[in-house]
Length: 358
Image 1 (cartoon, rainbow, N blue to C red):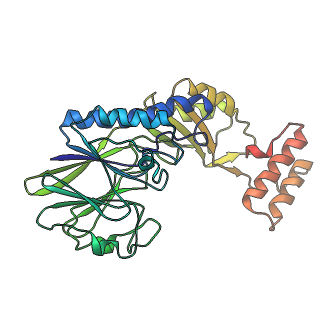
Image 2: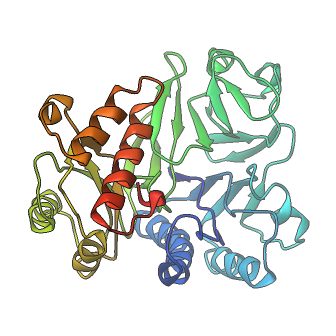
Image 3: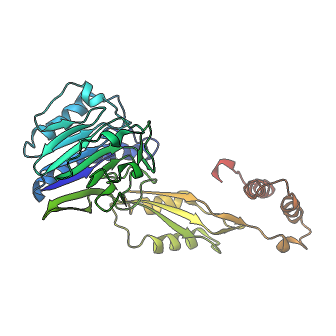
């Protein structure tokens, strides 16, 4: 038997805090497409069911059209059983909708169990300190538990799942949701706890390969593996700008850093290293230059200003005096010194400067 474990799809996510408006609509469609592709993948690989471990939707406010689209996929896939656990984002909105399907199985607040061939799938939306004391596992069969929350040593209310409390309970696979990247930890000698991660990244806090976990029950054991599914990967690539003196210098460094990234992906160039005082970088030009190459491209500057007091020890100009004064002020933090120096030098040179750009 084969089952696919997914979570945190966040259908209907607004995405406005993660992407520019020009990309929001297409990426929202791609989030739904990821659920559709997952269902098609289940059919192609002969999987019997899909476990959704919470946060299928991004909020409790779900449009009827969005629910109808979801249920159309489920109803058109009668050979696949969908085991759905509500997450902290959508809560009970799907249940309250009243929409039903014979192949949709929904977990309640307390332990709800479904017998599925050689497997029993247990799940609950609410967590508590003693919840694993009452999980109705059958140690003669294979047991999958489904929960949504933060994995810690001891269980508690509010979405805290105790790894230590799960040990010795006969759990073969703990299907988790809440964190958006794949990870796994051993429960005991018998079982493993797995975060499937999101099937499609939404922003630059969800980097790298995204997909789902494929569970196989065969030959008297339960095995699993991560499978990639994302249409686009999200990359944050460090670009060391130390010593760069011109925009073309930085352009060449970005080009080298992103040379092997597919054009369909989302890329952030993260400037690091020391930024020379004389550098005037045209970030808008660089954004335009690389936006033509990738689905989406942005720049984030985490570099630090390279200013050495000894370089201005004998500089008798107003600029030298200003820099020495700022660098010697111990009441200022490094970031404050950097902003003051940038503003001051821009004022001395007659250039317009927006402090929010630092």
